[in-house]
Image (tube, rainbow over all chains, first blue to last red):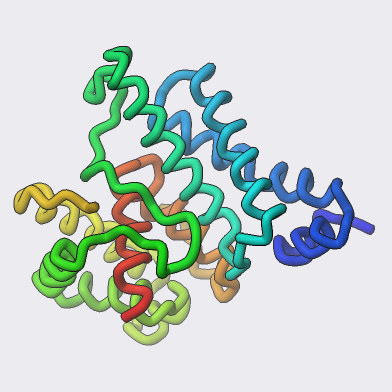
Length: 194
Length: 44
C-alpha cells in the first residue's frame, strides 16, 4: 500500500491499529516543516535538533496515550507542541543566562503557551481575549471581514475569496495586513497574550 | 505571493498550510498570533 496516498487520519488510525511504520510516515511528512519552524526561532542547528526530538517524542506519547483528537490539523497540532517546547527552551536558558532573547530573535508578543489539548485546556485570560476582540473591531472593514470569516466561521480562502468577490491572493493579502495591524495594536496596548 | 487562485483550498489541511506559507511565512510573531486567534475566535 502506498502510504503517501493516505491521509493523516488514515495513517494515525493505522498506527493505532498496530502498524508502527505509519507514525514514521506521518512524522516524515511534516518533520521538515517543524524543524524549519523551530530553527526560525532558536537559530541554532543543535538546539533545533534537540527541540525537534522533544517535540516528536511528546507528540507520539500523546497519541499513544489516546489524548490526541484528530481534527484534520495534525501539522498545526505538531507545530503547536514545537512552539511550546521552544518557549520552554528559552525559559530554561534564560534561567541560566545563556540566551539573550533579542539576540536570538525571540521577540514574540508574550510568553503564551498554547494549549496542546482541547479548547477547554486553553490558558487565555478573558480580559486579554476581550481586548483582542476589540482590536479586531478596529481593523479596516475588509481586513476585519477576512479575519472573522477565517477564524470565526472557518471558511477556506477560496470560500472567502468567492464571498467577498476578490481573488484568493487578495484575500490572503488582506489576512496578512490584518495580522500585521493586530500585532501593531497589541504592542501599542502592551497586551501580553497569556 | 505566488498565483494560487487555481489551488484547491477546500481541504482544511491544505488551507491551513496555505495560510502559514503565504500569509505568515517566516514571521514568528504572526505565527504566534495566528494560533492565538484560532483559539479565542474558534468558539465564537
